[in-house]
Figure (cartoon, rainbow, N blue to C red):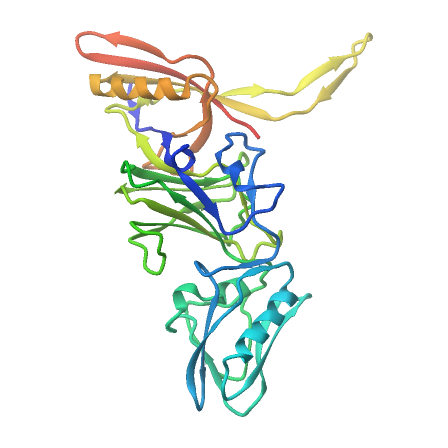
Length: 375
């Protein structure tokens, strides 16, 4: 019987008690503490509207025809509506502009921002990609395509409808112990097909040019949950940040369940290639005295009985650590086909205790009965 490569994701430094978590914003009813909660119903959520902060999106560069370049710092804070942000941007831009005055507006029907010259005779350029503050530009948050500059005009309308700002979740693992990171997951969010999720890492809490950056592979088609995932080369940096570009989401906020920033366990040999995917029907039937039934429709969960074959003593040490931490009922991730189908990654728990079987003279078999964790 053949085996299939599989990875167990249970060493999650993002939710360790030793990790400090900070967020770009949060609603009181959906605080950042929910990020540590394994229940899928507990999700962190940003404040509605636009959240402007210095670590992400408080800059906009201009070039005027006569006086040249100037930079605008947008006043940090939460702006519940596009109109409020547009009004603040108008104030902040005109405080530093030289040749012209400007008016920023937000159209509640098209959900697009417009930046326009109000008075003056000079054209204006918006160097979204080449400006000195392009790293922290507000452009993406107000619906502009920041991959190229806008030049030569006096009025610019956003390329996309914008409903809110980008957001971030940041983790400080602390200086004492380097943490091995080879797996990244963001899941149970309200992400849509245009959402982009980037994970960055750095030795210091400065994000102008992070040492590491990667974009996660997003799957919004999974009926179980929306997730984004990536496996990376071993990295041990102290500070990690998940940046979520969800400005086009009509919800007007971003939410996310438990994040995963940690290591994975890939045993020397995989699990048996032939395994069952057992359905657990939570739907029940009630029967009347005459036999008529009423169906109480509930979710369907899946069970995955995986048998890991021919493992070495070194693998047993790791399996023992795994069993000691997760025991029975503690959620973790399992990537069933990480090299073929990265999205075939499930949020599961051990339904019953793991079984160790010694296979003389030097090998082990581990039976793991996994059950999908529902919301």
